[in-house]
Image 1 (cartoon, rainbow, N blue to C red):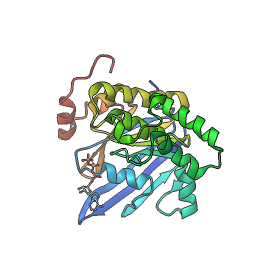
Image 2 (spheres, rainbow, N blue to C red; image 1 turned 45 degrees about the vertical axis):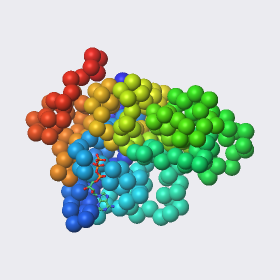
Image 3 (cartoon, protein in one colour; image 1 turned 90 degrees about the vertical axis):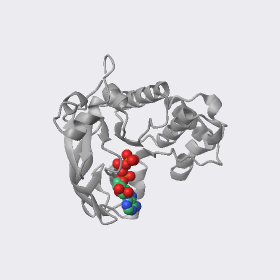
Image 4 (tube, rainbow, N blue to C red; image 1 turned 60 degrees about the vertical axis):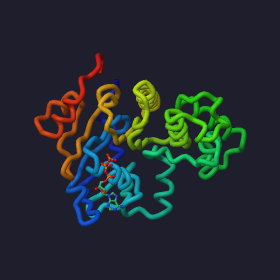
Length: 257
Ligand SMILES: Nc1ncnc2c1ncn2[C@@H]1O[C@H](COP(=O)(O)OP(=O)(O)OP(=O)(O)O)[C@@H](O)[C@H]1O
């Protein structure tokens, strides 16, 4: 497993992020950096603000204070054309997959290519097939509607779409939730392979301890609106903090994890 190159440039930077929602401070000064090629997981209890933070990092929400910088761009102050260009450099797999239900898998994966490139039809088709294979889906899924796929296959179709424009960063919001353990581990391995093969940077929100022990380089723990631990999983699991201890005691790592 790669553990990120200490000399690699930072591609995600959160700096002093504070977020007030519904009269409550969800984030109270969050800071961290993610280097190119790292596979990083953000963990924290339900409602700790993981999804809100992801939305802030990709420019869908604005923090009340502080800065989110993505590939060197301050997403909070960037203008529309800059954000549009930036959006072509990262892919997102939202919690529910968010595929277009009336489009086939092929049409879903092709959508970003049609929107952002002028590639001829036959090249789009080839790229769609390649992305589908990278995401671990059989080509037989190409002409199926999302509703005709299993949950695991839908996640992979959404992954293929997130990979459509060959992103530098992939954001995943709880990618293995709702998958059976075998499908979840296979999905983890697909993501790890993408990191190792293409130097893709992956930032994921997760509750899945097997993902942490199995494929992640670094874990960031969010609690009480702050980062309370940040490091390799074996080190974070030893941090003497009540939430961390109860979280990790729920799980015995599998061999080799
Ligand atoms: N648009 C919004 N307006 C007001 N409050 C919000 C909004 N979006 C999120 N919140 C609140 O912010 C807090 C953090 O929510 P968030 O969805 O980021 O948590 P999470 O860590 O991703 O949780 P989970 O693990 O359950 O997905 C919650 O208390 C939520 O109710």
